[in-house]
Image 1 (cartoon, helix red, strand yellow):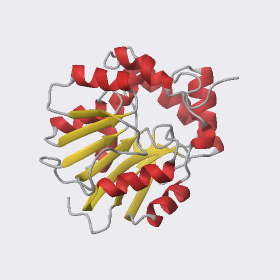
Image 2 (tube, rainbow, N blue to C red):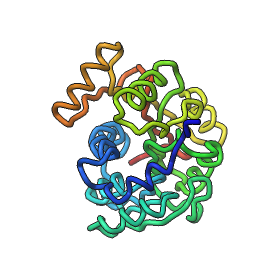
Image 3 (cartoon, rainbow, N blue to C red):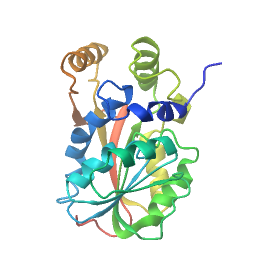
Amino acid sequence: MKLKNDLGFYDRQAADWWQPSAKVYALHQLNPLRFRFFDRYVSSWQGLSVLDVGCGGGYTCEFLAERGALVCGIDQSAACIEAACQHASSPIVYGVGAAEHLPYGDRQFDVVTCVDVLEHVDDLAQTLSEIRRVLKPAGLFCFDTVNRTWRSKLIMIWLLENILREIPTGVHDWQKFITPAELTSHLSSIGFTQVEMRGFNLFGSKVTDTVTTYWHYRRTGRFQISFDADTSVMYIGVAGSGLAWSG
């Protein structure tokens, strides 16, 4: 029986995390794109205390540190944290731990980032509650994840995992994908406000668009991106922890 939500993949990738030939390296290339969206809500990252939940080998942590943020990163994979520590040239504080039980004090961070992670956690509600707990009263939660639609199953699992093998088979579990309505409900129920989401569109709106964007990526090593109303596959968003965000 094929394993689903195979998080052991990240342990197996850890030693090669920063090699451009690694399967996981595509996530590194997404950071400049996703921060085009997050930067709309954070005018400057300089001096902000930021926690990256599910940091892997450190792509987002190093990206934030280069922008002057004071960064902590946590991941349940000890192998990934070791790779992150070995590669870091900035003073990033890394730790091993689960998103559902963050080893930090209340109201500690200005911003929490969580990218390519929410669709993998064991307990979504508990993870979001912990993120809310460690954010300061005027803090900001920045995230992206995958919607649970037939189109996301077609693209993320059938095409990218099973056919093209751009993503190793079994990394995702379609049942763990999260609809925007579900995520909004969870966030609102624990006190997040000003929830805003947009489609994080790497694949276009048609099957032919998906093929075109994929071959563009294979040819150039770069993604084509738009933030739009199409949340049918991936989406990106922010949520305030209570008071109005004034980043």
